[in-house]
Image (cartoon, rainbow, N blue to C red; front, side, top):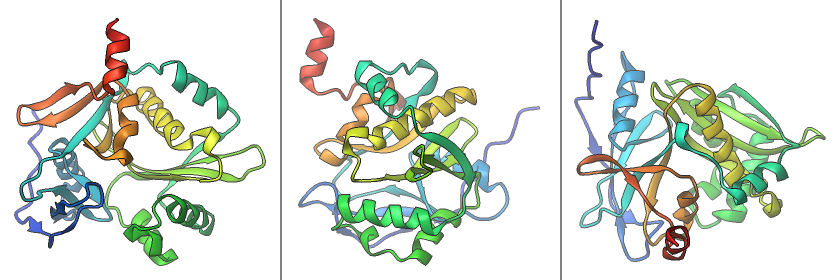
Length: 251
């Protein structure tokens, strides 16, 4: 029996415009809808496949006036094989223990989150979040959401990832890590491990949010190949490597 397609929500709303946090001089404006009611999981799957992201119990997508810089991207998990530099990062973090937990906020997570956003995103809106706001970010989900924690041999929390389980993959909602451990490249390591988890579960994709050309904050995503982007013609392969990398591999 063929499954019925998910019913899309009746109402979408437009947020007020504000300065873009990624591209200087541009304006950001999102459309969003509430994730609620029957078949919320199926609805969220359909929205994610259409380029939406989740925050709390809301699914949103950029609809910025005069700008289409944000490109939804996903890693093709079965075809992913880490290159030499990524393998070195995995080896560097081989001592970390990894555990999936229910989406419940803890004081330990919040302390790490606060250090991360203060160090890396001190001018962003998350920098002022209190514990209740952090807890809402983690727990206000009507979906199959979990937290993956990474701990060192002494049991200290070093990185966290908030993840949604979809029918066709995993969605990396938000991740944070100890900003004092630059040498470990914990942000990159977390993504490699989430791709590995998708592979273990037999899922085809890891959804990574948006690629924004010209934004240094998004430049790391080119490392996770093969990568697909959502275009006017549907999901298509993307080559986001810097020009010098493309020339090297073409030689």
